[in-house]
Length: 123
Image (cartoon, rainbow, N blue to C red):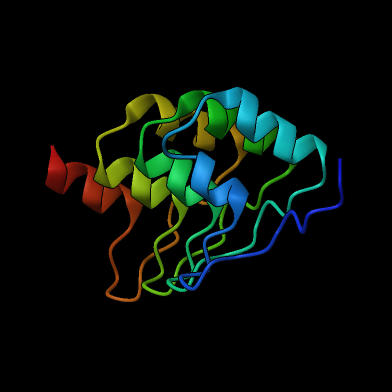
């Protein structure tokens, strides 16, 4: 309300929206989204808030970011997408949500691994 820079990142490229995605209540993420926070601003590793929500099992925040139009297939510097992150962690509900939203299922990382590969590898 006082005009703080909503997308100001710290030295690691972490924005306020990114920081709430793995740990905080959805209310915080919703408020930042309503205030116009950048959904796809990446940290220094190229990970976005959607990566953070997906890799930490935050189905509620993943749903919110998808509804707001977050880039489903934006890869981090290793080529991992949010779907890859969910599959890597065995988070089937998030993987299903992303697939239903149209996430690219065959987008490979820089070393050629796909979400299906990592899901099978991780069991």
